[in-house]
Image 1: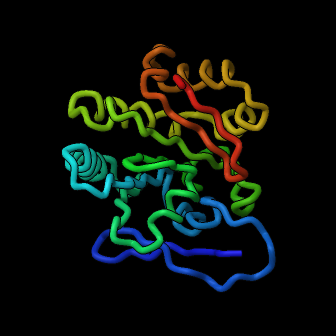
Image 2: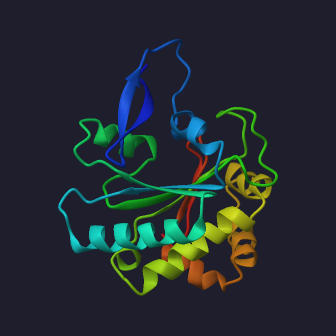
Length: 203
């Protein structure tokens, strides 16, 4: 089976193949695990591939956010010229870009760094164009998503995802983010585990 590593060229991310060993399932957790060790949150933006206004809005907003959050948050943009761009999207279960992905880093409290298959890690993905394309909504949305990852208990959140407990997940993250649950639903975020289990809020 195909296995990959992340390479960084000119500040943008690309996939590079690894030798295939065994038949273990390769997931986004395997891809990012080495990069999650020094951070609390790892953010990736997958641009539209059309140089749309939304791309400028998200990239500029993320650069400002990254500057003001320090080294515990890593902000990254995927290179759309990567010949394996589609495979990268597949690893994060993204049907089409643009998409903003936030992954839990291993420096978070209550993370069990037992390897990519056993650690309590998850991603939060936003593809809602009403959010991504709005210079007003996007900063607040990034703050909410970031707060969920930093303040939330990874064991509790991943437990809700394992059992597909949508209502419990929404209650937990609303309390953590200190906003009304309908504000989170408006983001239409998708929470996903390495094994592919996921919950989409706000359909």
